[in-house]
Image 1 (cartoon, rainbow over the protein chains, first blue to last red):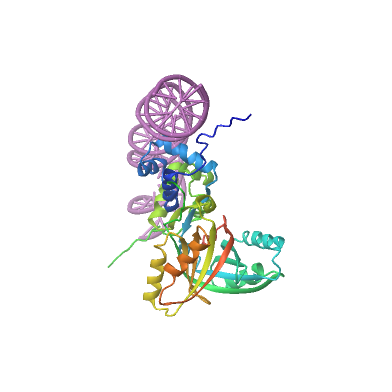
Image 2 (image 1 turned 135 degrees about the horizontal axis):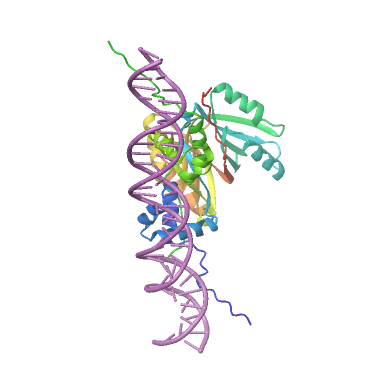
Length: 165
Length: 165
DNA sequence: TGTATTTCCGAATATTCTCCATTGTTGTAC
DNA sequence: GTACAACAATGGAGAATATTCGGAAATACA
């Protein structure tokens, strides 16, 4: 005879959580006080909410976006890659080896025309060539197609589709 | 007869700046104290450095990366786009209108096979279709090609190619 | 060398965060 | 309805952190 109480074991996110997430998506260096004020809750409540959000693993991480042109990085490119074999093993291997390269800012594993996209930042065209020929090309890499990036823009808006009434 | 002193009007970044930038790239929510300890400088020095880095506009921003699957977003896709006309005006217009859509996480303006890449996150396939047909397609959009994203990974490493001796 | 400028540090001050007891709210049982 | 249990929110005190500032140390330049 079980008598399980459910209560608000509520692991759901409510509007307040959503606001906090949105704020941090726009500016991950906001202080707890700033967030609390913006959302309209007590500081103690806000830090407690943050602790719970972190526990729920809502955030993959918080990252600074840097102006790479000020750091000696003059070329950004998107490299589109096809593999000869799409086994889980090869795909993981490829992704992991790409993430060891500091030139690789992020990776997308795709279903479609190509298998991977790499967003890379390099000093110059020689650096790009060396990177691609020496480190990106593998025996199971079928083809590379490189596009220069004129502009990358992060959207401050962010999609949240929660079911709060 | 001008006698302009230059001194260390040093707008250059040194190794300490580089360390701070790297740390914030990995974790943008580090406290000033944590950064100072990791770099090995006084807290007051560290906050002063941060002020200067911000003044130099090294950072585009600081953003939380959220686990969109926990927020009702079930599909992420990369949309590859070609425009009929690549005038500066059309390109700017297109980019700006894309950034008004909350589904668009970021935009890449490219030189190459396609003109734009959009990284989008949506609830489901109907939402994706509606987004593309109703909001992304414009009279100057020649073609769309959509690829499902299996995995997106941000590299904690980051390329900095400074010329400190 | 001496002087001007900048960077760094540490201590004092100001601010922010965390902990906790209390109060308020909501769901469940009777 | 009342009573109780589980949880969430609050404000305040003490702890932790950040900022300011005077002066020391380092660097640039003549």
